[in-house]
Image (cartoon, rainbow, N blue to C red; front, side, top):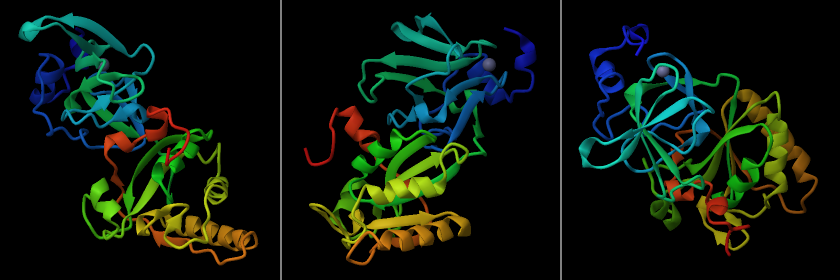
Length: 280
Ligand SMILES: [Zn+2]
C-alpha cells in the first residue's frame, strides 16, 4: 500500500480502510442515504460507485449492485471460517467491504457491502430534482426510468403528516402521503417542462384521488415543486393541459417536503418482477 493515500485518515477510517475493519451495522452515515452523486474512495478519492446503483439491502451497510468500471479489485478472504470476496479500491487497495451474489434483491443480483467510512459522497450539482404523484408509483417510475437524461429515480411517499411512513400506513389512505416518484435529471438533456409533459401524458389529472381502479388520496395527482421557477412552469402546463380535458384539472401543486424512500422491494418494481404494468 502507498502510505501517501492513508496519512490523512482519522484513526477510525484507518482501522477500516488499512486494517480491513468493519464498522458497526446501521451506524454509517451512508447506510440510509439516497442522493444523486458519486461515491469516491475516502483514501485516494477515486470514483467507485454511482449513486444510482445504491439500494437498501437491509444489512446495515451501504449496498451497491454495480461498480464503476475498473474501480474495484477483488480478493479471496478466508477470515472468519468462510470464503468471502473482499473488495478493495483498485487504485490504493484500501479496504471497502465484501461482495455477495445470489441474494436476488436487485436485477443485477450483486451486493457490494461497503463501509461508510471507506467512501465519501460527492453530489452531482448539475442535476435538478422533480417529484410528483400520478397513481401507482410502480408504473410512474417505470416510465421515467427509461427517459434519457433521468439519472436517478426512486419511489416513495411525500405530502402527508406521518413521519417515516411505510407502505401499509400509506395504503390505509389516512396518512395523506401520496405515492410519488422522485427524479434527479440533467436539465441539459431534458427540461423540467419536458418531464412535466411526460407526467401529464401518462395519467388522468381530472380524477380526484383516483387513477383507474386505484382510489385513495395516496393516488392523487400532485406535483411537488422545489423552486418558484418550477412552480411557474407547472402552472403554465396546467393551463395548457386544461385545454385537453373536459373536466377541470384536479392536480395539486404543493411545495416539496421530506421525501420518504419506499421499501426496497417497491424500487424498480415492474422491471424487477418482469411486469409490464400495475394490476397484473
Ligand atoms: Zn482508493
